[in-house]
Structures are given as structure tokens and as C-alpha cells.
Length: 291
Image (tube, rainbow, N blue to C red; front, side):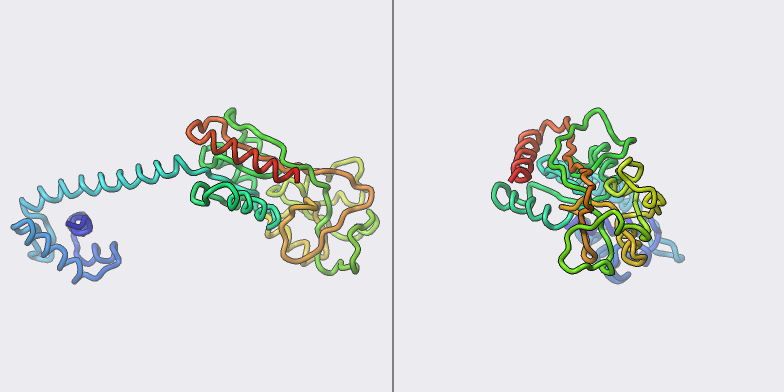
């Protein structure tokens, strides 16, 4: 017999209402009544009293209610344990939401050539969320430009994937033909934006190589807000010139600015049941980065 009949019965008793039980389960009151009637027929006795506008269990109903509630709890526990067993074999990977399709394409090529996609679960996360999830063991791997200082646990290791030259991301109004680089003087008069959610945007604002006119940084919220502010106000932000994700705007290198940003892979060191898959995946990501 379907466990749903027992679920409907338990909900009717808990809520003391066929109507409320129907709403909870997104079915009509009539459907609930039919399921309870079928349950009564299969058991061979009345389970519910409906007199005087009240819904109460009969003596037989109390027995069935108690056992039905136990079955439902066991079913839910079984489903949770099944999902946990499935998750135990899945490598959970978070990638910084600032990273563009070029990097994702390399990840996809690794999966296509060496693994089954069902062995991995990928998420796009900002570095605060990625740091927190890695620290709480909700991720096995996080790829990004840093970890939040409060989320660096003892069970987290790291490897350097690549170091890319820092550039400036600007709005479309800065279009300068096919030029790929600009001078520091070209930044003068344009507002500079940064976000705590994107470490590359803040890493050199206090550097000695920065001219004084660029120090009036305007802090924004998430990455989307950062890009929007840059676009709307004809401004700029510092970004990974190789992997920064944007749909509009331009990326320029700045003549004389040789600052590098580091993309790193952070990983849990205590996931023994996935250690082989984790190590193999990490090595393949590093190998692709060297090409």
C-alpha cells in the first residue's frame, strides 16, 4: 500500500481537518476523503470520527496513527540515508562566481575526457559563501581567489592553479578600437569600484604602484552590483585579465601594472572516502592550467 495513504491519514489527525490536510498535500478535500476511505477498507475498520465538526481518531485509528507516524519517520530517514550515501561518492565543487566560461570550459573538458558528470556536483559561489561551505564540509573543493579569514579551518589545504596579470574591467563607453592596453593616465577622472566579494578588485588599492588619484575607491556589494556600477558610471575595477566573467564591457591591461592575481584550489583534507577522486581531479585541473 502506498505510504501516501498513511501520510494523508496522519495529516488529517494532526491538523484535525480534511481540508487542511488537502492543502498541505496540494490535493482536494475529496481526494483526501477517498484515500482515507480506501485505507479504512483495507484495514477493515473505521479510523476517523467526523461528528460535530470535529475530526478525531477512533481507538483503531489511534493505533494506526501511531504506527503510520513511525512508518513515515522511517521512510524519511531511509531517503535521507540514501541521499547521504549517494553524496558520499560525489565530489562537491564550488567555483568562484567571478570565473568566466573559459575556465568552466576546461572543467567540462576534464569531465568529458576522464569522468562521469554524475560523480561531481558543481556550484557557482562568491568567495564568502564558498569559504563558509568549505569550512562546514558542505564542499570538498572551492576554486577562487582567496578564503574568508574566518573560514580557514585546520582541515583545508590549497594549491596554486595559476597566476594571471591583473587588468581593469571598464564599461562599453571606453571602447578604443582594438586596443588591448591603456596607461595609468587613462584611468584619471573615472571612478574606481571594488567589492569585498571579489578579492581581485581590492588587492592593489593600497599598493605603492597606484597613483594617488585611484585611491578614492567606492565599495559595492556583490559581483553583479560591482559590474553594474562600473557600466553605469563609466568607471573601472581591477580584475583577473584572463578569467573575469562579464557579458558586456572591456578588459584592458594597464601599461606598467605587473601585479598578479592568484587563482587557487582549496580542498578538504579529511574526506578519506573521496581522497582518490579528489586528488586525481586536482591533478587534472593543474595539468590543464599548465597547457
